[in-house]
Image 1 (spheres, protein in one colour):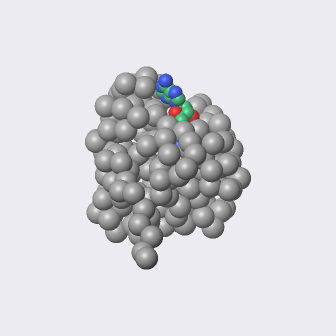
Image 2 (image 1 turned 90 degrees about the vertical axis):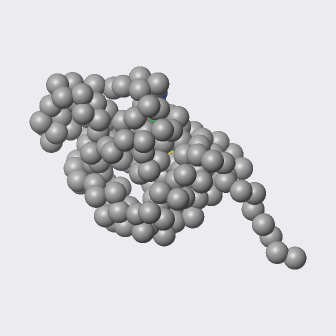
Length: 162
Ligand code: 5CA
């Protein structure tokens, strides 16, 4: 008998499809436990929180331009330091604005496949791991990937965020 997994929820299926469009060979997994926060995702995936990719949306305080920061779960963003990289100070959009920009709800925001294009930056510390885990559209869906492969696929600029 062949084991079959249940079909992905539409939001997770969109992430799988977006990966295909980027030529990124990943498999979205629906986990049996919540992966809504970096800590929950680390527990569910059996890795340290540093290996979890947080997908954080900011907007430029001057330009209004949206930015996506892919940050190691162990790091907090030093907004002043990152602002120096971006050339403007950062604002945090509220949950509704994040959803409008990305097409996904907080807790499941993936690193690609968004409703609008987001200038993307990656925490250099993610590149110290062989494998990282990122959200895939829902608060239970994740995928794992070599961070260098993810960085190339999303054309991220590597920066220090702390
Ligand atoms: N699924 C996990 C890891 S794979 C995940 O999505 N983690 S996360 O860190 O990327 O997403 C939660 C983040 O959303 C929080 O770290 C926080 O920065 C942000 N956030 C939480 N609530 C709000 C809110 N009301 N408005 C804007 N951002 C928020």
